[in-house]
Structure formats: C-alpha cells, structure tokens
Length: 441
Ligand SMILES: Cc1cc2nc3c(=O)[nH]c(=O)nc-3n(C[C@H](O)[C@H](O)[C@H](O)COP(=O)(O)OP(=O)(O)OC[C@H]3O[C@@H](n4cnc5c(N)ncnc54)[C@H](O)[C@@H]3O)c2cc1C
Image 1: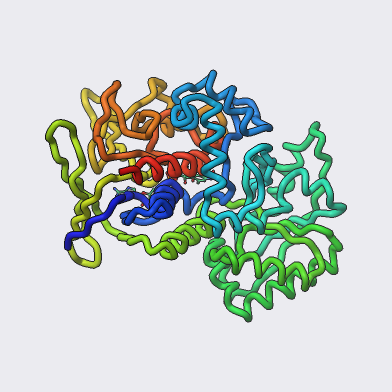
Image 2 (image 1 turned 180 degrees about the horizontal axis):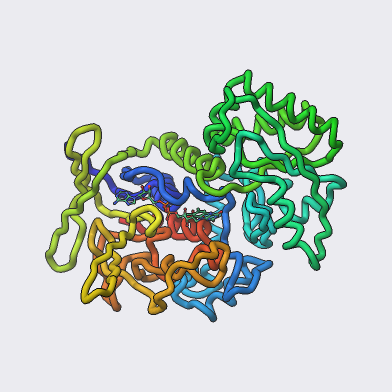
C-alpha cells in the first residue's frame, strides 16, 4: 500500500501531535506513525515550561529564558529562538496556537510558574495545570481553612498520611503555613485490595461505582468538615468527562475538590494523550499505529528521506512525503535505544537512534542516572539526543543530515526535563516550530 503526504510525522506524543496539528492547520496533508504511547501518557499531566535554571527556581518563566541563554546556549528554546527574545516569541506563539480542546483542559499562563503539589507530597514549578487540579497549588491551598487529603483503601500507591508528613516537612520554614488532615474511603470494589489509578478511573465511569464514590465523599466531608478535599488523580481519562465528574462531586458534597498530579501509570497523562488522539482525528490526520518503522534514503546532491515503510493492519505500508518530522522521544519511549556489551571485563554502553541511525550527542559525565528521582541536577542521560539547527534540522557538526527532515521533542539533545522541569513545554515549542518548517514548500 503506497500513500503520499505533504508531511509525515513519526511519534504521537505531545511533540509529534502538535507538529502534525500545526502542519495540518497550514493546509498540509499529514500522516502520523507511531508504535504506541510514550512519555506524554506517563507524565503527571502538568505542562512544565521552565521550572529551574542551573538548579535555581524560576518564578517568571519568560525571564528564566534570559538566564537559560547564559547557562545553556544550545538548549532547544534558545537555538530555535536564536536567543532568549526569540524563544519567548516562539513559546508565546506555540501556546497561542494550541488546539482549542487542549486549551480547555488547562489553566495557567506562560508568565508565572505555580507551585503545584504532587502525589508524592512534594511540590514543583509548572506553568499549566489541568482544570481538575486547579486548587492543588500552594497559593490556592493557602486560601482554604481546612484541607482534607483523602486516600482510597483500594489504591495503595497513594498514602495520605505519607503525603502529609512529606509536604509538612517541605513547607517548614516557608511562607506557606498550610495544615492538612487525612482520611480514607473504601469503594468496595469486589474485595480487590490493590488497584491502579487507571483501573479505578475506568471503574468509576460505571454509575453504581461513581455513586459509591459520591456517597463516601459526602460522608467524609460531613464527618471532617473540610473546605478543600485533595484526592489522587482517579477521575476519567477523558478530559470533559473528568471535569463533569468533578463538578458533580463538588455540588453533591458542597465542598471544593481537587486532583493531585500523579505518578505513572498516570490518569492525567493518559487524559492528555487521549485528547491529542481526538484532536488529530478531528483534523482527519491519518494515524498509523505500527510495530516497526524503516526509512529508505535517497542520495543525490543532498541526502533526503524517500519513504518510510511499516506494517499496519497486517499490510506493508509505504509512506512517501515531501517532508518528515521525527518526534520519537528519548530513551523512555524508544526514540533512543541503549545497548550493553562487555569488552575486557568492562561494560560498554552504547546509544542509538534506531530509525535513521543518526549520530547522537552524548554528555561527558558518566553518572547518567541518579537514584534520587527528584534530584534537579542529575539524570544527564536525558541530555542524550540529536543535535539540531535553528530550523530543527538534524545536524552533525555543521552539516545538515537530511534536507527534508525536522526533529522535535525529547529526542533533541541538550536539555534535561527533570532538572529543568521543561518536558511538555519543549515538546510543544519544538513541535510547533517543526510543524511550521515542515509545512513550507
Ligand atoms: C514519568 C514521567 C513524568 C513526567 N512528568 C512531566 C510533567 O509533569 N510535566 C512535563 O512537562 N513533562 C513531564 N514529563 C516529560 C514529558 O512527558 C516528555 O518530555 C514529553 O512527553 C516528551 O514528548 P515527546 O512527544 O517528545 O515524546 P513521547 O511522548 O515519548 O512520544 C514519543 C512517540 O514516539 C513513538 N516512537 C518511539 N520510537 C518509535 C519508533 N521506532 N517507531 C515509531 N514510533 C516510535 C512512541 O510510541 C511515542 O508515540 C514526564 C516524563 C516522565 C517519563
């Protein structure tokens, strides 16, 4: 089966989806191919744009860019903006042109970071939070008299007691003097003891179980008399349904309720990914979910990608396109693969971009992973990636590798989404820019 498009995108995470959306909005015939879901579906659901530069907390995101240019001039924001001022403009344009459905899911702004609480009992800087989490920031929590942190007996991954002891420690000696009380409810889910948040989220779409959740919430609100209840993220993975569920719970209990950003498997992460899929389908973009992708390359004066081959619906599919975008993510989603070999009793670790075998930037430090997942300075494995120019074309030295290929998202080198808190922000900004560049004739 042979198909021809103006733009073909590899990867259906935030970067690939935004790139495909923008190219389609600019009149291109677009296809998107992916193996499945990646890091976007695992994310806590908040859109981080720039939370830390050089380990320092960033209050004003756009001002943080100026500092970023000084400390990391090769950062994707700075390179595509040709400096911090241009980066500011690209970010503003990218967020102003987000699909309407995605905008409706979020609250926040590009100027000031919020400190949002997480299910771990920590807080982190972020720019946009989902509407169902809108009261889960430190500033909002301060407005409430009595905050109840509510666990669910069948959901062992979230312990309200542990949450409270962690967050109370973190808030000691800060301006945020917030007190929390804790309780747990039981949903009586066929005596199952340990469910994932995603399973609970699916179960509560059943009216009988949702009614039980509502009754239990009302009971605990009457007993404890809070004015805000923080719950783990267990509402629907469909964004509109989640907002409806939340307002139904709030009006029954006569109390404000807010979800906490989650760890994987993450309901809010899946909520974004489901919404992206809906947005792409609404724009009639052809989506091919496939196991393996192989590229065929054409060499003449310059190197171009001729086509992408894959298997879809048990058939071999060949996709030809004027331009291609690769947004296959980092080591977490398989956009970059690592292999081990043993030579002279030493372990040799190698990294590879599997579709086009493009050369990768690898930082010199060898301590790639840190056991402390909250460490804002480590995990330099995330900086491994493809080097790129200001138009997001892949480069090696000063040489552009393919004249019809653009790169976006976490497969890019020179940024570290954990250290900077910039994951979905970079995916959106570079997806937007790649979508514009690839749609040019
Ligand atoms: C646990 C966790 C929590 C996070 N929390 C946050 C957060 O709260 N806020 C935030 O801003 N960021 C967060 N991030 C970071 C953020 O999720 C990522 O930076 C962002 O989602 C990257 O988007 P992407 O589109 O580049 O890649 P991905 O979303 O990983 O998408 C990659 C796509 O490429 C496809 N793919 C991979 N290899 C191939 C192949 N060979 N052929 C075809 N398709 C392929 C995958 O199937 C997938 O569709 C988190 C990340 C993780 C892992």
